[in-house]
View: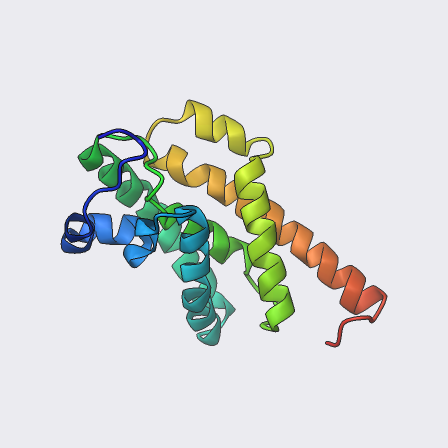
Length: 170
């Protein structure tokens, strides 16, 4: 399968590995599947946040390590490393970007946009993971880095706009 070819929806939705790797179907989006996967992760992040930060962190760690296998296995079955429809890694990165963030719409939008920015730009060491690790961990780790950059940037914005300048309500 060529990298831009999308597997049939029946294949993705009928195979538990592909179903998870394709972000419960969000990776089937014909336009910007990574963005679709990041958007699909937000309601799950909200549900995780309702359980408390310990559960959120624990589930994010489980998603991270499960993602190494899920993304690697799906890529192997498709015959394409890091197929564009594999978006479990976007889920993990978005979970990281939104960790402990106040659940006001403007912080969630900012977290989403920052994560997408860093995922596309791939600052060091994300690009190194993306280029040199050709397995499930390589698929996921660039998004972990993007999530960490987004998280740090978002908390910088929260500190500046809410805590320091007071222009955004608490």
